Image (cartoon, rainbow, N blue to C red; front, side):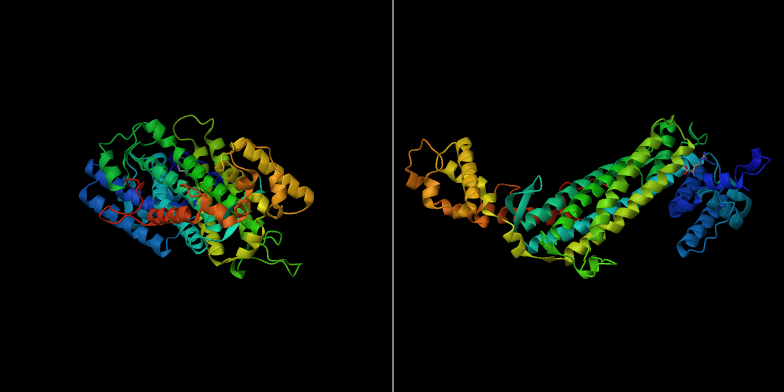
Length: 479
Ligand code: ARG
């Protein structure tokens, strides 16, 4: 028997029941449902709906149910339509008729929205923790590789040398933005729908501000019609999750590339690579490929959620039951991928000699132009001369740093106070990639000094704020 069977004489078709029930997935909200109900019992007790004894019985019963969920002894029944009805049914078994008073002035519409928000408030810190775990790994590996040089790429073409630490830290900052977004989202999740009833508000004298405080929300929502239909937080969460997924995909794509024989910059440990059923020599970066692939799935979850919301009128519609699965799936996906990627990065072997060998002197053509600029040549002319030298070297089939002094002197017709000798005298010094990297010393650049500063700032960001309020992330949001 369902909780709403009073109006009905017939029974719901068996397959229709399967379509309608949300218990298979919303039982994940069990702890939050009980917590919300305990708070609600307090609110309607204060409003004079429950006597002292009834309130005590309901709270006692709900605490027992919470314990049953915690111990995994709660027995669901076939007639339980969703987590809310399952809890109420069980409460009746434990305390009898008084259980029937709990749902006074409440609807599953404000209840489910409250449970889901509570779940998200509980879960956001766990996701943030997983992101922080990967960030900590990026910082640790960066710290070990501050002078290892590798090619930096644009358009996936070799561009300029960078340090491995700089590349690793580039992924730290994108994840930091993701955490900012999650912190920002939290304040919008923490708006309480409970007390909005089915759609029009509750008819009992419920102190919703107190209810919000009790449940750890910032404040109660201001419009019941909006409140029971508002799933912005679910869509926003999915966007935040998807953005993390896209960032992990970017990292993963490069990991796939850099672990190929052609690049050979890193070798994955056995714990984080897989073999081929046919080709005995293969060591595959499956986990990075899955991380890249799951970004596609996450994008689908986000667009699916938005498509569900589009076209809904205000207040509750059963379409909204479709909100939980994608959010849970996105959460589970990320909390699984993040520690795996962290482990894979932590245990990979870096091949500094392979990375260095991939840097050719043409990648220092910008430095060559800068060299001429420092000798007083306007950048445009310097750029043209450096370009020409690359062409000359390519035509001769030699690398740029192997051009002879005579060849250098024949490049470019500059109006310069300096003699050709003086202009080109120090040119060979340009082709030390470490010197190139060191010159990029402004904030955000790849010089080891600058990257060291990044690393230090990142470490400060990762340190939780002390109880004195000093240290930690200056951007830390109010909680
Ligand atoms: N299982 C429902 C959901 O997840 C709970 C709310 C049901 N409300 C209703 N009016 N049928 O959205």
